[in-house]
Each structure stands twice: as C-alpha cells, then as structure tokens.
Image 1 (tube, one colour):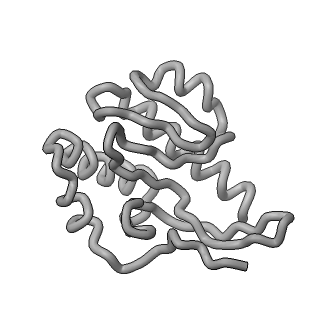
Image 2 (cartoon, one colour):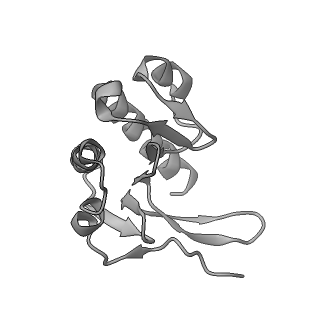
Length: 138
C-alpha cells in the first residue's frame, strides 16, 4: 500500500496563506480559516503543502486502503477556493441552493470569494459535514 501524500504536518498555515498573491483571496482564506475554526472548535493545520484542514479522522475502505484526512478543509486554488466537505452531509442540496455563487464536484465546493456566499449557510454545512464524517468513521 502506498502512503498518502496529503498528511497533517507542522508547516505554518499563516505562512502558507501569506503566499496567496491575490489580496482578496488571501484575506478570504484567513477569514475562512477563522470561521471554520470557530465552527468546528479545531485549530487550522496544514495537510500536505496546499490544504488547510481542521480536525481529523481515520478511514478504512473495503479495499483495505486506510489513512487519515481532515474533517473539513480548504485550499486556495488558481481560479477559486476549494472547500472539502463530506459529499453526503445532511441537507446538502437544500443548503447549497441557499449558499450563494459556487460550483460543485463530488466532495468539493468551489467559491470565488466569501462575499459571494452566505457565511451562516457555510457554518451549517461545515457542522453537518463534520457530523456526517464522524457518524461514518467514529
């Protein structure tokens, strides 16, 4: 079995976020980090070189693959900020309908800037996502 490349480490979240060149995105990432930390009660930690994660859980698939992952995370990407939440959290579709301007992939939600979204809905999505992951991986 290969080891996961994206693991929790001691790199500085502040140093990483300060590398974001776009000023609005950089400020949004610092604000997002504070919002998620307050919502989850977990301190921001670096996962790999480009993901800011909060909390962690251990997973093991039927295939035998296992590892650790953040309960919630985000990464500033070139075109958007990627939010990493559970793909099956409670009221996902309903909350996304009220969330604001975004795009989705299986487990990622992409936002251009925090001013495009409803932060209170984000907090509810984060809370529901953490609950879902904890129920699947107690």
